[in-house]
Length: 182
Length: 182
Image (cartoon, rainbow over the protein chains, first blue to last red):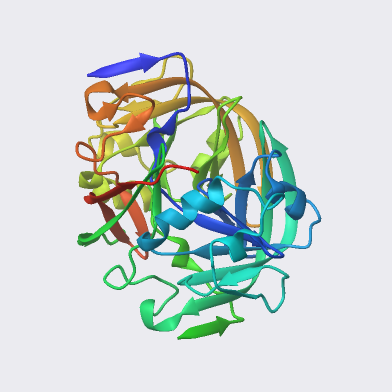
C-alpha cells in the first residue's frame, strides 16, 4: 500500500550506501553520503557536515583520501563515526593501520580494498552539508581481490554497506546478474 | 597485494550503488551516481551526463522524481539506460506503470518501494556530468514494506544495486548487523 508522506523526516529509504572512510592527515571519518561525480576528469564527491572536524580539514583544500573496506569493519565505522579527531587520534585509539598517501597527505588504510587519493577540485555548500569534490590522482587497490577492468569481484569482497540507523549489511554474491544493454 | 594505479581509468571499485530511476514528464533513466546531500532542508542529488535527454529535461528546473525499485527490475534498468526518451516513450515501450507526481510533473513508478518528488534546488556543472540537486517535497512509500522511522526493512525489500559493467546485485539480509555508536 502506497502512503504519501508530506513530512519528509529523515527519508532514509535510499539506503544501502557503501561506507567511505574519508581521510586527511591522521584523521578519518565514515561517510554514507558520497558519489562519483565525473568520469573525465575522474571526480569523487563526499558530503560532510560543518559540525565535523573533517569539514575543517577538507576546507584547507589540500585534498583527501577515500577508503572502502569490507563488512568486517562495521564496528570501526561506528567507532570512528561517533568520535571526533578534535578529541582523540582515532587511528591510534582504534589501532587502525595506515600509510600516508603518495600525492595527498591522507591515510591509505591497510585494510582498504581500494583507496583513492583526491586533490581538492571544488567545494559547494548545499543545505546543511558541504560537498567536497576531489579529483582522483592515484588509486591503491588490492589487485588480487579485484577483477580486471576497474571492478570489484563480489566473490572476494563483501563491501561494508550502511543501511541507516546504525545498521550495516553487505551484498549476496549469489544474486549477481548481468543485464546487457540493448 | 596492494597495487598503485596512476592511470585512474573508470575507477569502478566504489560499487555497489543503488539504482535510482530519475524521472521527469513521461521519461525515466536509471542513475547509479546519486547521493543524499542535506538533511534539513532535505536535498537529494543526482549526476547526469549532458548527453542524456534527462539532462535537457532537468535543466528546465521544474524538478524531478527519484524512484527506488527491487532487484527484479535489473532488466528494466538496462532497457531504460540504453535507450533515449528522444527516440521512444520508454514507459510505454517497456510497459512501466506510473502515475504523475502530486507536486512535480514526474513519474511515480507503480513498482517503486519509495519515490521522492523533488523541486529543483541547485545545478552545478562538475567535470563531464551535471549535479542536479532537488529538494524533497513529498515521499511515496510502500508502507507495508518499510519499517518505521524512515527505513527499509531488508527482510521485505531487496534493493536493486548496480555493481558496474552491466552487473546487478542485492543485499543479503542475513548479514545485517547493528553497531551502536559510542
